[in-house]
Length: 347
Ligand SMILES: Cc1cc2nc3c(=O)[nH]c(=O)nc-3n(C[C@H](O)[C@H](O)[C@H](O)COP(=O)(O)O)c2cc1C
Image (cartoon, rainbow, N blue to C red):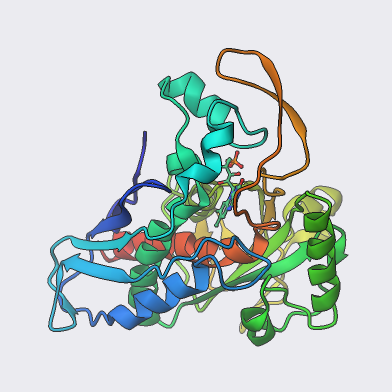
C-alpha cells in the first residue's frame, strides 16, 4: 500500500478503522515553529463523527496525542508524530456481512488485490483513515498561516439542491456545511428523506485557498494543479475535480475563458488561481464531486467471498451524505500540498 505523500513536507499515515490507533508522522517542518496542539484538536473536532444526526453516529473523542517533534510548544525540526486512539469501534456491527462485498465500497478490490479477509469497518478504506490527514493538515495550516494563506471548503450542492450564495461563516455552523442559508433546510430535508429510504446522496463541495502567493508549483510533473488533484482525489468518495471554470471551459471561447490581466491583478478567475501549474496569486478555487455514501440499508445485490450471489443490507453507523465531513479533509489535503510546494520553493 502507499501511505506516504509529499516531497519536503512529507507525511506518513497509519491506522485502520477498527485498529488500536490512527496517526501520522510529519517530516520536513522547520525547527522553531510555534505549534499549539489545540489548533490540531480544533481541526480534528471539525472532522469527527457523532456531531449531528446527519453524520455517522460513531462516538469518538478523537483526542490527539503529540508523541514527538515538539517541545515547549515549538517544533524541533525532527519528525512530528501525532496519534489518536480508537474508542468506539464496534466490529460486531459488521459480523453478519463479514463475508460479503459492500457494493460501492472498496471491499471487492482490496480482496482481489491483497487477498486478505474483509476487515470490519473497512480498514484503510474507511473514512476514518482521513483523521490522520486532518491532523497533518492542521500542522500544514499552522505553517501556511505564517504567510496568511487561508483555506476553507464548504458544500455547494447536495443532489439537485444548489447553493446560490456563499456565506463562509454560515457553512461552518451547518451540519452539512451548506454555504447558502436559504438552501440549508432543503438540503437537510433531502438527506433526512434519503436516509429514511435506506439510501444516501452525493453532492459537490468547493474549496477556496486565499492569499496564495504567485509561484507555487513545479512544472512539469509537480504542477500545483496536478499535486492538488492527486491529494484531493486520494480522499475516498471524491469522484471528480475542477479548477476554476473547470469542465465549463470546454464550452467557452478563449475570449470568455481567458482572465484579462490588469496592473492590479486578474479581472476574472476562470483559471482557478493556477496557470501553467504555477499559482498566479489569485484565489485557488476547486470543486469536487462527492459520490453518495456506499453503505446503505436498502437491499442490494452482491456476492460473498466465494462468488455466490447474495443480498446485502448494511446496518452499521454511516454518514447518509459525506459532503460536510469531507470539507475538513479536503482543506487538510490542500494545506499539505500548498505547504509542500511552499517549502520546495524555499529550497
Ligand atoms: C470523511 C469520510 C467519511 C466516510 N464515511 C463513510 C461511511 O460512513 N460509510 C461508507 O460506506 N463510506 C464512507 N466513506 C466513503 C468510503 O470511504 C469510500 O467510498 C470507499 O473507500 C471507496 O472508495 P472510493 O469511493 O474512492 O472508490 C467516507 C469517506 C470519507 C472521506
